[in-house]
Length: 327
Image (tube, rainbow, N blue to C red):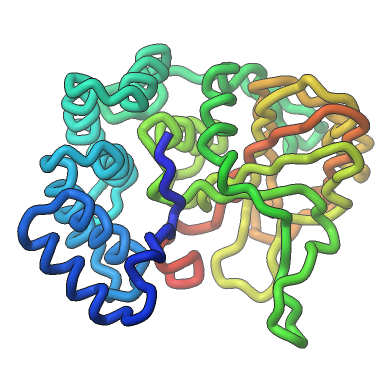
């Protein structure tokens, strides 16, 4: 698994005199040093202390990988698969993955094994889908049984594990981060650097299950609920946005816990989580108006730990680097 988070920077290089540190890294990168090229690529992805330059980041990571930097190769594979800095190119990503496997990169071999077990076409999209069952009379809530395998679910959890942090919101009065008043879980967002080919293929599967394009989905979000934690009754509709969340897909990553049901009180529906099942539900009607019946809750976990992946689907595609409202 790539240890670098979506916007990680090696802070040790920035102590004391940031501009001198940046110049030193740039000199080392120009000389072809793998670690310096890797750092340069991360800075260009993050957009600080250097301006964001996604194609430049891809080029720096490629040079770092060619210099033997294994983590740079894994990130380059992820960015090629998900289209950061260039169009998404599954064929190129698979070629880079094969190169990494041949070089003895263990995480790359693990990705290859997971991909080999998937039913994918040459573009990395699902060649087949599970049956989607309506759970409500109006069909606005649906379930795909065993949409993800246990191994795929475990991979998502591992990808997010070191990124998890208590859910928080920004207090509009103070600008400070405060505990989320509705969601008491830990949360992690799997951004482009972590969206390796396996997670990219799973996001493609989510798009197919929801009959949407992959570019409409926000970054996959992982939630971890410990005993007593919950997601109180809410709607996924966002206020005052131009690019609304029209649908939501939930995937249960495990089921070895008690409690934690997903409930839709306006439908009288309570869903017991089963590992790999996907729940797809509409947040708006055919005219784009909010569905009041889409209110739902993640009931408190009584024992064990619940893991859940969520992808919120917007009305229109957007660039994950600039946000949904830039569309």
